[in-house]
Length: 199
Image (cartoon, rainbow, N blue to C red; front, top):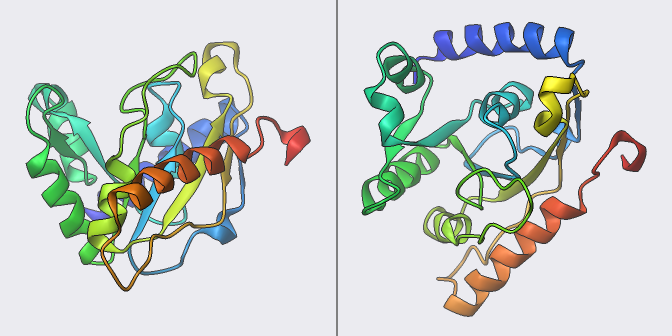
């Protein structure tokens, strides 16, 4: 990750999102200041990754579908700010390994548990968050983005961060614990405010 480029992009996005969509961040104090952390977030818009990355007090690396890295300019740009490819139609082993490397180095990654944009709330939730939390022992910070699905209507953006959740740190989690943890993370995301009125 090119830290200078990442920070420059973040400040540019802050000006953009803060001016046009009046973005506000809530619960940033729930994000650990150092050490590995996984951000698990809802996903309704293509704007979600840059919005979450801009709102977070930590730099975030993302998995991104490998097709994006083949696009001139875009591919090198997202790679420079910490994105890495995942083959959504084949094996995700390389992406998982890269995620664990980032976390073991004390970094943070962002994951959208539905795996793709979930416009109506019916997408199947995947177990990647629990797997990475188990492999890295990193806490998971639930996050909820509000307003990004109505960006064309200039709805105000709100980003909510909840208290972190963790699997047992001193032993390998069982399959049942990982399944329950996935459910716990999704409940934590959905329990965050849907609007400023519930903040």
